[in-house]
Image (cartoon, rainbow, N blue to C red; front, side):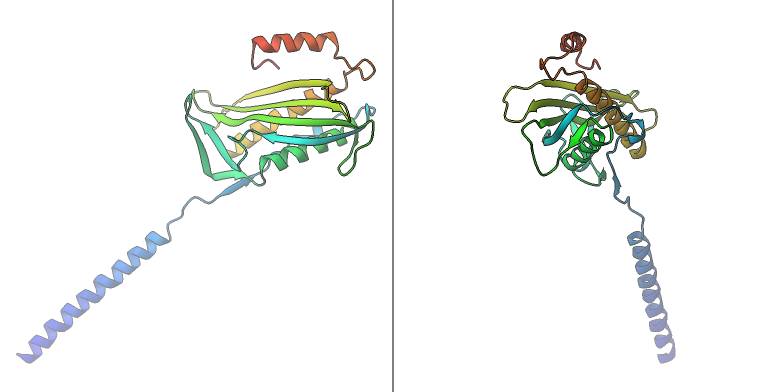
Length: 231
């Protein structure tokens, strides 16, 4: 009788131990489950598209980069509806957009020989550039045709002068054929290349003596009021 009792106890104990073992093993597998990892991306234009021309300004300096508070963070932003935006926790910029745009604009102007780009000093004849990034998001309102959106407004003025010599907004919309973080950042970079190329060209059209834009640019600015996304 005692032997049978001890045998039953041992069997029950073995069963409990097996249940505990498989429970722990199951929990371990759950804990080992692969969760999405954060990925980091860089905003960077295609500098190989730069064409070096004769220097146009003696010296220039990028003095101000302003990012809309809606897009100043590192996370990618997606527009889902008229008033609905979402941020992507797992895909983000390596550095804050303000730092990225400062680096990109400064480097483009320097490598294109638009002028001597200053960083720590300003001369009497230095021209000052400000940029305001108004939009930086992916538009999913039309699920069939999602778009990358980028809008930057530039202004130029001479040191110690209040009046702006130049002020213009550049807009870019890129259709996304494939929805992935890699394609998104690629599209933004294409847009940034396009914007900086057009900005540089417009800077070189400014008549520094009369401080006026060519008539063709004035016409473009008039057309732009009619169509927000005219480039």
